[in-house]
Image: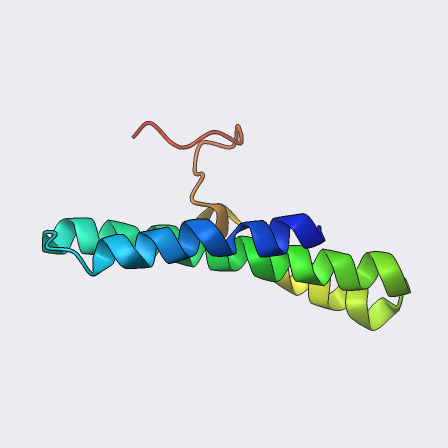
Amino acid sequence: MKGTVTGLDVPKRMLRNLQDSNISGDDAEFLDRMISVLNALQLEARALTAYSKSRKPEDAAQLRKRTPTSPAETGRTDGTGRPSTA
């Protein structure tokens, strides 16, 4: 997971650099959402790393807090694990 945590820094930095260029508001909003997704992945990877090392119940609780479970959290509403086509 450490590779995942650190590996996401480069794409986030590239997206931020792209935001600094002359882009439309819709594009900037999209980039904000992409960066938010990468941040969420990093948080989940950090929580998984902590739990896999310690196996402590409190670290498991942190992992559960970081892992999206509802359709609203995952952005998937059709129940298949794929993005909704609606």
